[in-house]
Length: 83
Image (cartoon, rainbow, N blue to C red; front, side):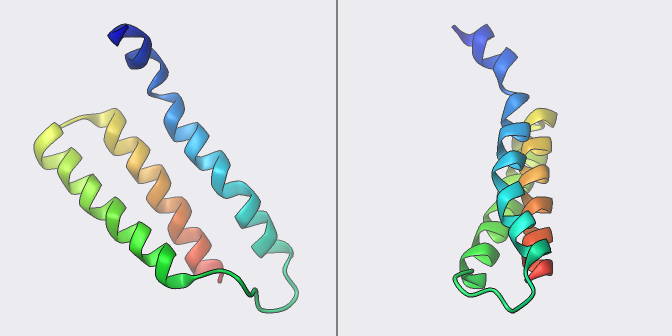
């Protein structure tokens, strides 16, 4: 069972990134300021990613975990930057 999850884990970064695509597309196409995007929530999620990256780097030393958190964090920063 463990080997199945070890094999599937790299897909998490792709799945996570694909979840941000609709939000990014909505922001790219927006002609007016976007309502309904809570910057406080996005900033909290970025902060959580920073903590998770630190945990992954200093404690887990797990490259796949750090890559997954990094992809999520960069995607969130793009969304916040576009807002």
